Image 1 (cartoon, rainbow, N blue to C red):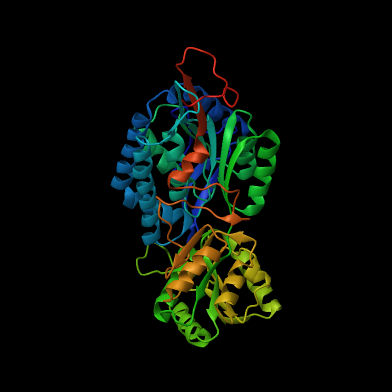
Image 2 (image 1 turned 180 degrees about the vertical axis):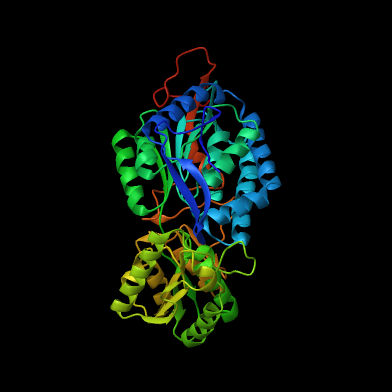
Length: 496
């Protein structure tokens, strides 16, 4: 099928007539769809539509805005299976995971809808008599939303649903690897009753659409999830123009396993954390830090389990690991495996593309485990974003925390232990936005803040109530009903 942009309530193509193909990474012969290769002209149209719609949308009561988001959640639930199957076809992860991705969008819709009747401000005593003080949230304006391909439903809904409930309008650029899921989301919002211009969808590349969207003077806020390199470029531009920007970037997440841990449980967690979504998650377990006393036992069990993982088309319910998103990503994974070997790490399993049987037409790579990794090796420091995990040995608990924190990133973290004291110290001392105890580094829930520290972002959070601070402005309100001029911090109020 041929798909289009969605601008001001209408499905339209690119003025240039240029198009790009969307193909199945598990079977490159399968054409999923053809999409418009848009540019600055389409961005201008979409931003203008969003700006005009903002004048009306911001005046719609927040509970009424939220009712539309709730209806969108109901529609996502109704069409969950077909959305999930489309997602697997265009980005590869197994069907159980794309169902989960869609469910996260549903959960976000319900949660964001609830905020339409909350979005609490504060009332507080004024310091002067006959004076009332409070704070309220107000919308910002046109929001540019740029989302990645690895969670093509969940992450856009994290951004778009709260942005809309807060009273903003949106221009949405989905990843060019997953444009169909973007279409499915925007169709759902339109069907739910969102007025024309409130949500706009523009397909294209980062340079063709992303850059003009970030740089557009009428875009008041940019929310971006992607690489730290791209995030720095966006932050640099937004800093020059004082444009609000929210960045959720990379990770190099570690799972600590202490000598008192349930080893079988920790291995299960490592398998899911390292190879779920074929390792293509910002929260993926990229490092496993093992106490030296259980290193051999854990490593032997992990390698044996990894060798049994089944690769193939994610629509097959018997498949454990799908393909990488594209050929370039597979080449990057191979380059990091070669780097690890040159650095002296020991390859325990995997380490090469899979091109046999069900994998011969896709971008598959064998799940890979490196042992004898030193914490300062490149494979232990740089985000690989694929099915490669590095095993590092720690002398004790203190050493394990130090190794985990030895990273420029700080998104997710995990510790397996049955010692409550160690668990609480880890929660206190780990430098990360998320810490799991006796669970893997993946599996965030939508009612808690999501984001990280250091190079993982610029301090904002998605999900939970924290996301409201991204998509709304605080206004402080003072109402003086004394009938006279009162001067705060100057008038001396006597207490008799």
